Length: 455
Image 1 (cartoon, one colour):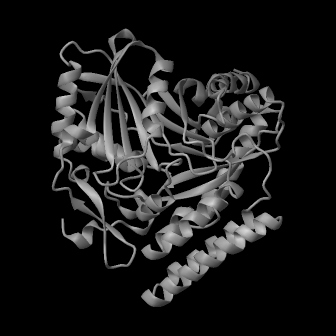
Image 2: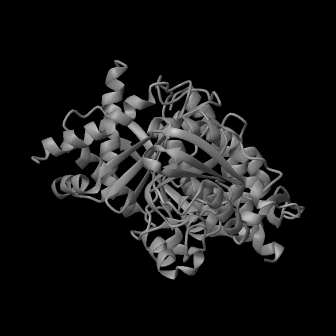
Image 3: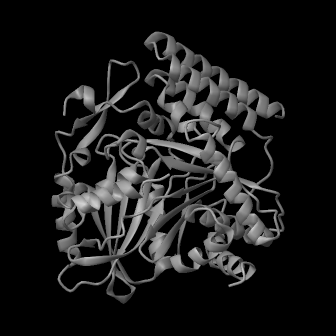
């Protein structure tokens, strides 16, 4: 690939600039496969190693560029050794909690920027003879839907399965003094940068869009309030995995309306309400950043990030679960009517129009201001509803892991695969030592909605 085609986009670069040692910006996915007598752990490691060599993006590392200043590009790693990126862990009799503990430990460590920004971890010895695979990739390399494209290349059939690739594309969706000071810093830096970029490049449309988003961001910032979901990063991590039945969620949807994602946001709101009650806390709302894929709009390749986002108030103070769900639905419908390229949630769009050099300045300011804008990330990454296999073993579960932004303590990743929605909870280990209480509250929130909806 020519070097000019291998440059990191401004949005890809922003994820590198947002990273620090306590808040690494890689995402992950935990896949669990049914037992297959023909696939030993060593054979799976060998299989993944060979397939990773065939994926161009997995052979490349980030290198700085002279032009544009502060930019970066993907370049072939002359010392690339795929086997050095594929690891094996034995977890005899490992249940879901044991797997979650290992995932948390592996995900807490930053990736080595001197090498291609990914790792694969094969986990053998899970209960029932199953084995797992943790894929860990830097957000600069791909967004969640892009990671699905890379993941398909590693499975049996790989990129020779056009039906799987097409299905993957089809499933892509979708002030106090402190607020004033942070807003002025963030707005001034980003606004000036966007204006300079627009003038220099003649991209007045992008500059205008950037100013609109900055105005929305400043108008949406809130005074800081004590919250168990906001805390200085500790660098430690916890993970938990939960499966919810699609048929139960569909029964709820028939009553409350909206999309499946709307129902899942309402379930998350209910679970957080129960969890807050265990802390003796009663908050009126928590604000979620909900990423929205732009791949359908761009016609998108699997490389890089193609994202915007919405902000959604989760009404955790609402006692009636059905009313809670209807309020979530109404807010998401308002977001979608406005479109993913407008509003305070469109922070990724804003990052995408900044020149690379200014990300060095804007990213730390954005990280500082993010807790004033939202409380947690809730993202959904659907899989194609096809039988997927690795070494002949059939995929059974897939839990996405979203990165934790600095100052935030919880990220919720959701992935629907066939009859189950798999939810990966990822948290700061020091700030949320009782993450299992949130995982236990998720099925309770589903049962509560079913009962309230008359089922």
